[in-house]
Image (cartoon, rainbow, N blue to C red):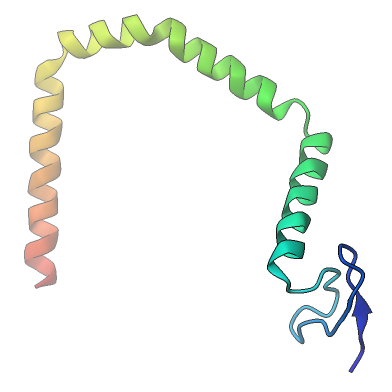
Length: 97
């Protein structure tokens, strides 16, 4: 069996037979460290991702009052929607039994 050295703790380990390119041992603390490093690398490669997400949430905050007013004005729409949804769920339950 081929042994490899863990990139986190430095101990030797035998890689999983289904993942021969495994670079980190199965020790939970090493796996946690690997996940943190992967997240850090991903954030470095995708710096704009969170900027767009922040813009979207800012837009949603600005539109909150508009959405609230729209929901108030269209209460009947939601009543119909919920009625149809519950009817479909009852049909599914009846068909599956």
